[in-house]
Length: 550
Image 1: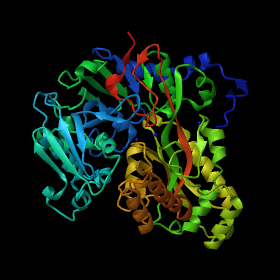
Image 2: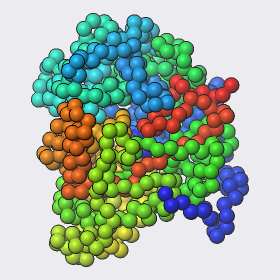
Image 3: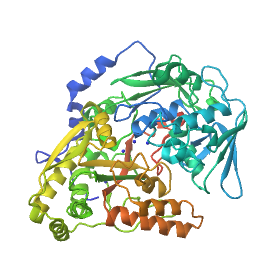
Image 4: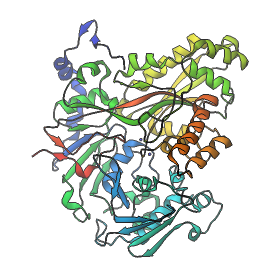
C-alpha cells in the first residue's frame, strides 16, 4: 500500500538544545536554495503538505507505498472511502450497499450524479473495469491478493482461468455492481475503500496505455484534479467541482512536496512554507525530545510495524535456526531508546497491539545465549564459516532520514558482537529498494507494514505464499491453510485462535521476519491554523477534509 520508549534529554556537543537557534540556523543555505528554486508565478496553495518520499506512481492498481497512496486518495475514489476521524469505511461513489444473509454477496448502489472531472458519466461499467484491470495479471498489482476473496479472482489473477466473466464481479445495471465472494468476509468493504479498488478512467487508459497518468486533462473520480506532478518538486491538485461531494471539499489547491530531509522539513515548516508534515522520519532526531513537547507536534498509536525480513531462498537464510538466531541476538529496547526515541513499543510479534478482536502470541525475545546455541546447531559455532551478508535499507527522497541507517548500524554491531557475524550495509533509493525486495535481490532487509484496515488479516495475509507483499520467498502450506481457515471462520474467538497459530509459525517457529517495534504516529501542524486532520489507527487523512482555519 506506504511508514517512540525510553526517551532521554537531547544534547548537542554536551550542551542543552536551543531549539530557536537550531531551527533558524539549521541548513539555512539549503532552505534559501530550495525556496529560490520553487518561486513561480502561480496561485499559492491553500495547504502545503510535506509527504516524505517521492511517489513512484499515482496509479491506484499498482501503488505500494504510503507516500503514493496519500496523493492518490485525492484524485480517485472507490465505492467506499474512509471516514477522516474513525478511518472506518463509509459510502463513496456508492451511496450504499446490501449484504446477503450468508455474507457472500455484496450489492453496491452507485450514486446517480457521478461524473468524471472531465464531464463524462461514471457508471457501473467503470467500477467493474477498474477492479478487473487490477486483477489482470498484465497489470501486475502487488495488492491484487486482497481481492482473492472474490469468486475466481485468484484464478484469474494467476492466469489459471482466462475468461473475466467467470470472476464474481458484474454489473446488474448502470448503477449497480454485484460481487460474489468465496465465503463471508467481514472486512470486504474495508478493502473496497483501499486505493486498489478506486475507480480509474477506462477511456484514458485504453487511449494512452502505461502513460495514461500524463493525459491532460486527467479524468478524476475523486475530490481533486491533478494540475501537475513535477518530479522532485511537488504534486499540485485543485478542487474537482464535478465531484459528487464537492460541497464538502474544504480546500481549492493542495500542494504535496517530496522532502526526505528532516532538517529541510523542519525549516520549511518553521518558515511557513509548509503547513503539515506527515512523516515521523521528518523530525530531526537530535531535536525529537524537545519538539514532541510542543502543542503542534502530535503523537498517536497506529497500526504499523517495523521489522526485518530475510530472503529465505538464499543460504544460510533457508535454515530457520539461522533466522531465529539472528532474531534473538537483537536488543530491540536499545533501538527504541537510542535511535527512534518517539515512544515506540518493542515487539516480538507482528500484528500491532490494539488490533480489533485480536491479541498476538509472543515471538522470539532477546536471548543471546540461545541465539549462539541455535547458530552452532546450524553449523556456525561462534559465527565461524558464516558467510558475510548484506543488510538492505532505503533512503528517502532528498537524502532522507537517518533512522534506517542508524538501525542498520546497530543491527550490524549486535550481530557481530553477539554472534561473530559480519554484515555489510547497502543503502539504496526507494525505487531500487522496492525492486530489490520484489526481485528477492537481497539477503536481509529493513521493512515496515502499515495496516490497510483494522483486522489481523491485513498483517498476516501479507505472508501467504501467493501474496505479492510477501517478498521473502517463504512458503508454508500450514500457514496458508490457517490464514484461509481464519478468514472463513465466522466465530470471532475461533478466528482469533487460527490467526494466533499462524502468527506463531511466522514470528517464532519459522521466523522469515523479525518484528522490532510498533510505529508511533507523529505528524506536525498547528491546530490553530489547520483543521480536518484527525488521529486514527490507520494514520489515514483524506485530503478533502483538510483546510486552513478561517
